[in-house]
Amino acid sequence: MSVRCRACIKCREYIVIHPSNPINQVEIKRFEKVHSGHTIMTTDINEVKGAYSSFKNHTNEKDTQETE
Ligand SMILES: [Zn+2]
Image (cartoon, rainbow, N blue to C red; front, side):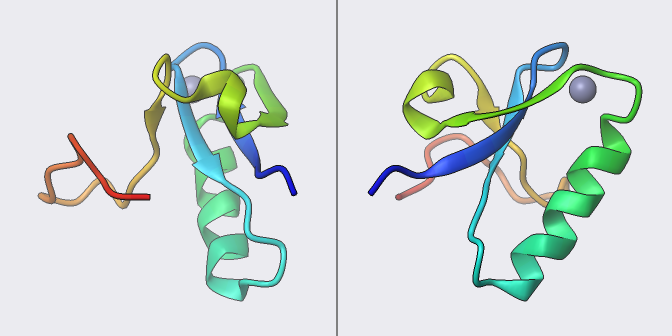
């Protein structure tokens, strides 16, 4: 089973899609809002992993090495 994500090509950020997670749906909406006007694509996580950074809550939390 492949994991899909939404990725902004311009900012090189991505957010993983969890279809059955309502909180994730909100996060994706937020991602799309932050990156509105940018080029957002839906792609396989393997396409962006390593090259793109993951979209987090943009709080003070360090998002360097997050666990899977
Ligand atoms: Zn963007």
